[in-house]
Image (cartoon, rainbow, N blue to C red; front, side, top):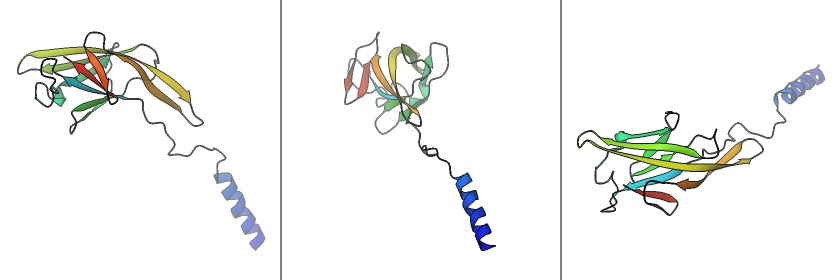
Length: 147
């Protein structure tokens, strides 16, 4: 009887254990890039000098769908998570609106993504970020855009 119970327990354990090498926690980190918006005249961050507030940021794609982002308060940076469905020629429109001063700034940002197939998921990397209508440069991996 003990042998039968042991055999049933082993059989149940074997059926519940998956041969899949991918573990539940295996996920790719989302593709993203960091942006700092600075005043072209003073080189001050527009959130630091309160020209704009983080609550006044709207980022959309060309289909007018919101693009997810995260504002990082300690450094006044914006982390943007572009759509990975289209890997080439992603264009997003970044809008800052200050209703008090009636100031609106629109910034177009284009980027490409490269995809790398992993065993359990696909990782995406943001490449070729361009800001065609503004002066910009990259400092320590952060895209600094002047408005």
